[in-house]
Image (cartoon, rainbow, N blue to C red):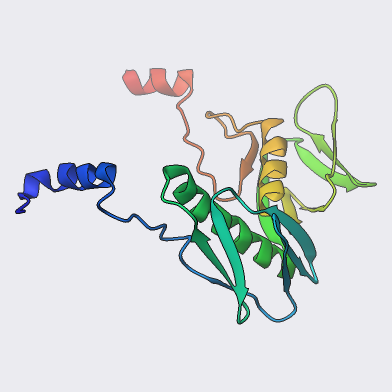
Length: 205
């Protein structure tokens, strides 16, 4: 069959629906090498990763087979359903994060902008002054480390998802506003600024 350039995508979609093309997960098919100092233990329904920095237990997602061979974790699908293909890549990504987190912390940084805005850590509580009439006391979750340096909040932990969730929760206390940029933002976040009413009026004259 000759496929014209304009019909390549339609033809590919047709073959996928008919099951004539075997779609493999680009992520899932890659084995994960277990580095020195990290142990992986397989049970019938779980995968346990343990290392000097922490440990994690991952449920083996439906439709997947996980094997430990020659110091490598190998993931393979047991059927060809769309959900299994999705689980394949997800399982591999979660395991890769668990292996990395068992060896070293994941990190996220937040920047505080604003006159009088500040943060400090006291007795496993992050205390935030963000322009409100009261201070915000945020209990630091288990497995999470928070360090404050000047106007930077550094969040670290072995669980990448928990680190991200913690950073998101802190940011929500005072999201950066678009005029002066005051608030809490990620260190790599670009805040799109808006011109104030006076600046906009002057520009229009």
